[in-house]
Structures are given as structure tokens and as C-alpha cells.
Length: 297
Image (tube, rainbow, N blue to C red; front, side, top):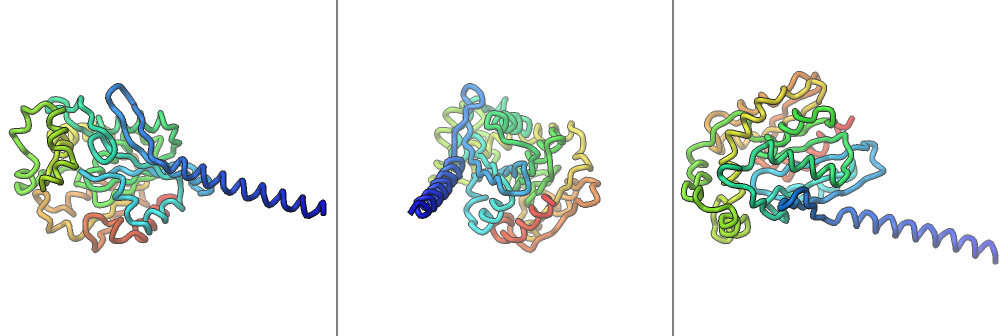
């Protein structure tokens, strides 16, 4: 009888530990809001994986005008990446669940420096441990490139998923959409209220306040990246390029050719052209996850 009671206690303790473990995982997976400075709050999600061999953090930088959902909506990709390490993703101000930063204006637009100053503050306040494996998609690739150049000592590797080329000009077709000259005189609080991401979708518009201020800061972003040292050759980089973007008419010139300068001289860095649309992680989830595995080796 004593043996049975002892076994029962052992089983009960095991069950309690499992429940507590699950509760802990769910707690950390719930998104949180962090005020990094007065008037600037960012929404982020953290998915810890203490069992993974990689003890750093995989950080995701969203593309232009999209949210953390671009990493979580494909369950195959999301599940695969969670098995590889701890994940950290966030929405830049004015997108998804992050409120707008009303300090933004035509004279203080969204730039790579501004985005990454906020990101490093967020990572420090949330105690998100390096080394970081950076994953950047589309326009987020420019921001990721800046971060990797600025903080090379924190970086495990870089995966760029069809990034906007480091040096390019928008096509006339795109400029006609995002360069809304009349918006330049509208105060940022009014612009964000009237042309928020959600309102722009309701109005069937192809641009919104965030994309506009990002465009206004585009020249500064390119200059800020140029002023930093080149990406360290100690950092391994994998560049995934969408074959279908070559005919998308998003920029002037060749999309594929203009992406090449991202590559550094690390002997293990490589560029792979993928038969896919712009969101390669959604169309080829296993393939992209395999590239993350390669960077973690």
C-alpha cells in the first residue's frame, strides 16, 4: 500500500510539472507590449525553446506593410522554426498590434537607423539573449542588413528572404502609388488616424501612413547602410531570391542582379534562386526551414 501511495505521488508530481511547463510555454508565447521610450510602444512575441541546441535567439524582421503573421500563418514553417530555437518577432510601429509612433513625420521619417535603435532597445528590455540569427524579408532585409553590420558581435548568421535590393530605385508604377505628395502637409497623428494600415485596406488603397513614411526615409536608409562597415566575413549569410520577382516591375533594373551585393566573402555564404513568389517562406516552408538549420550548424 505504501508503495502504491509513493508511486501515485511520483506520477502526480510528474503531471504537475508537465502542466506547469505547458503553462510557462503558453505564457511566454503570448504577445506583450513594451514601452521602450515615452510615446513608443512595440508589440512582440517570444517563443522560448530551452531544449534546442541553439541557445541564442532567432529574430524575424517583417517585410514592408506586413506583420508577425507572415511568420506564423504557415503552420508548417512556424512549427519547424520553433523546433530549431527560441523565436522573437515583433511589429514595427503603426503595423499589426504596435501603435503608431507619432514622433514620425516627413522631417523624421522611418529609416533603418530608427527601426534598429528601437529594436535593440526592445531586445535589451525584454532580455532577449544573443547570439542572434537574423531573418529578414523584403524591405525588412534592408533593416536586417543594417542590424548585422551595426552589431556583428551579436550575430550567429543572416537569412535574407527575397530582400529588397540594397541599392535600387522604385519603378514609376510603384512610385505613383506610394509617393502621395498631398500627405506631406498632414500632421502625423492625422495621417496615421486616417490612413492607418487597417483603414487603407478598407479604402482599398495600396499604401498607408507607415509605407509612406518609410518611403520618405528611403534615401536616408540607403545612406545609413552605406556608412556602416560591410557585413563581416565572419558572418555566414544565405540569400534566397524569388525567380518570379524578376518580372514584377517593382524596381528599375533587374531584381535578381541588384540583390547580389548582399553577399559577403564568407566561404559558406551563398545565394539560392527559388522558383517561388515573394513570400518564399509561405510557398516553400520546409526549404526555408532547412536553410535556417544550415545557418545553425
